[in-house]
Image: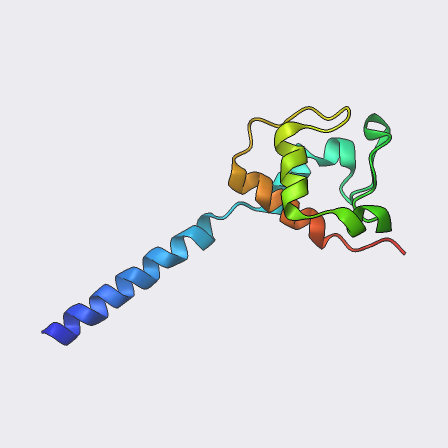
Length: 105
């Protein structure tokens, strides 16, 4: 009986720990819907984002961190206004996605 309860409890705990992963924000989808209109699907700024660095440039890659990108998303930078509608988790997901963009050659 005790062994059965342990197995059930272990299974329940495993199922609960999988929930955050399933609910995790999709950085690529969020980037497409919130950022790409100015920053381009590939991270190359469009004319409305003129002056910002391409997310694939060596200059950007050299200094960018997830924390600095989240700060720019939440606080704004240059012409970009803060995106207040994003949760911290969503902003982090976007930042993580941006950091995966392949460097330009």
